[in-house]
Image 1 (cartoon, rainbow, N blue to C red):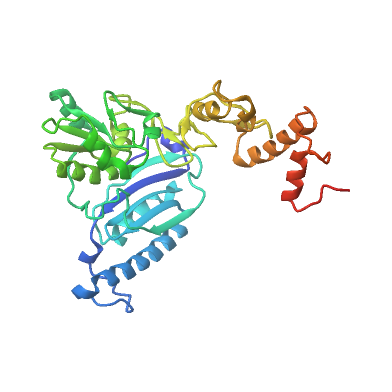
Image 2 (cartoon, rainbow, N blue to C red):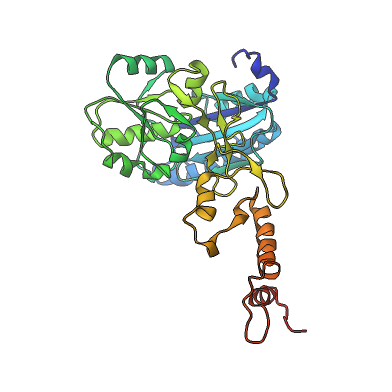
Length: 370
């Protein structure tokens, strides 16, 4: 683990991002396990699946012991995780994971947080460790990796196509200058999107993502589609900012934890927060929750959808101006009640019962008659 800089010393937690494509079937099973089937060809699949359960259990217990939270995905193709734990335990867990993964070489990307970045710990078994929907893509056959310095040298030396393989909401926080945005909503759409993009297959492609894992599969997919020279940024944006802050990457790097994004010092963003309604990052100014009066962060898209100038009057919904779905629920019920009983927007039924009140009581199983 590298020597800490002065700003890092004020943080209590380390956030580690890591992944490795490997074939578990290439390794001998845990010798302490006597209940695994043999590794003959007809039993390989069953043996690997059983081994994954063992690996999952072993890893979870060690992560829990070292007070880590976050998410680690396991699959037949390898593992992929982001965890947050007390800084004092960072080197311990890195050593353990390397040993747990049969002493393979793992590139840990480390950033820091003042508080725990996740709510809970999860270790899950999946079909893929990064979902592109193509199980036949072999992530162990990696493309040409460029260090941050090699990346800059390549960009300055010749005409290239810089490709951002992240989702559109991530790109809103920041990206490389002149990077191509495929407008992805989810990574599984990458093969389709890149096939329709106006990209030159004879011109070098330099691709990047947050930590590198999506590029591993994306680069193989592009080579399969006929692109000649495909390179990827080693360690992704996180490693690039660590080595080259305030250089060619503009803005901040979106991350999938409570920090929302990392600035050019790899510190939690002061600019972006998550919109409580849709979950996308927003840099909109905070407002006051109409229900509990605490700070609220709502993206412009959600505001326009519910209160924009094109929304019909009877469909306008001020409950969006709250700070959480819980507050929105309580405010919305109270707001509708006020609309019906205070503002006089009543629809009286033939028997004289207010329809809004009657429906509410019927839903609760009550009678509206005295």
